[in-house]
Image (cartoon, rainbow, N blue to C red; front, side):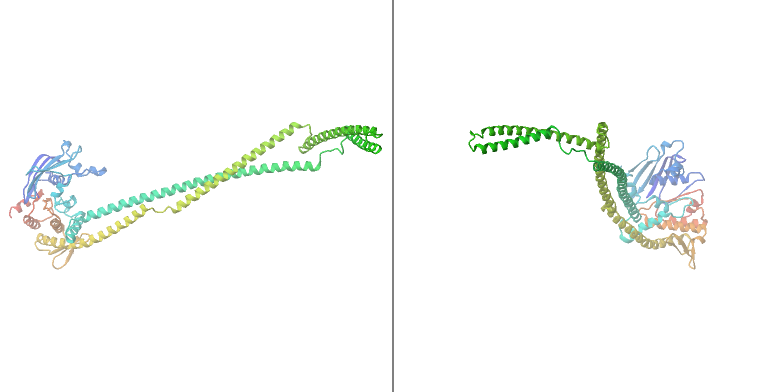
Length: 541
């Protein structure tokens, strides 16, 4: 890829500025505050866009830093470049009103889609992090970032192991996100189950409260029932004692007319029978003889006797009924403890007894209802407690648990594979970086080594020297060699190398070595500097 033109419509301090570029090494010279870092930031923004930060970070991000003061609504630019032998025009708008991007092949007018990844394809999958860790070297930013280590792991997975297109870091991120999503679903499932168990427990507590209320209500009714029973027993006991002490008064025998009539009737009947017998004896069976008068008289007397006897019996019955009525009245008066003439008080007592029986019936019904309701709630509460104890993880929860274990295992295995492949890639990186470092130091150092954790040391043929003992200039050469080696290994499409005041700590000898090495590379190199020595040295090659 070669950038051929930058048209900065409105970006930072530049407005309507054109910069034409070419292949090979070139120098953009400018004094301090000229805008060299602005050009660098513009190239990056055109390639990858310009995102606005959030919260407090927005006050110091690149979007705010390079937003035009005078005309923020025209925050835009154009970049022309050649890639794969074809020329393209990339235009972007960055303003707050709405971002947009368009990509057109100027050879045939074909419109490509930035949104759907056509630009990413032209950049060979270059990411902003990899761009910043390899070909984009900002002022005092020579040390590669963490993105370089991740990209190297991806490279190892892609080419050393399978030869395919595996994004190891992306795959790890994908697995990690899936695991987090499963864990979230699992937490939600567990939370929902606990809520259900909580609802069961709460309902059970409500039932227990109702049962306790019913128990108290039953006890209260039970006490009232016992109280009524005791009062009834007292009344019954008092009544039974009165009857035993005083029996109702009775007559020994009926007197008056009933007895006289009975006696006369009995005598008449007896005389009639005797007279009839005597007349029959005197006249024989012939009633027309001398015995006839006796028989007639005896018959008359017998009939009169029967009449008198009937009247006496009737009178006797009437007298017995009257005596019985009087005796019952006297007996009832004695049981109530009142005199027979106190009829009104007796009726009130009967009313109280009736009310007492009704109240007892009501209490008995209430007690039966309470027992039935309490039993129903007891069964319901027992069933709820059983459901609570049995409510363990469901099928969905078990499936999520299993999926979580699988993802955790896959993540661990992929990390182990990344460590193994990273070790293989480290060998390749160290070899290429050592070759570049040896050229940059003009053979003073033969090799360098970047171990796991980015621990760096160099070899001068006699001893191995850790990075912390190196001068700042040598350390800058180490970082530059690592960046260039990584760029060669990782980039499918050779990207322009942008060096913004990168050689501030290089002396003349180091600068001469690095520019000589750059001039031999088959890529575009853009050097942004406030010194003229880079241009002077390049003019000698």
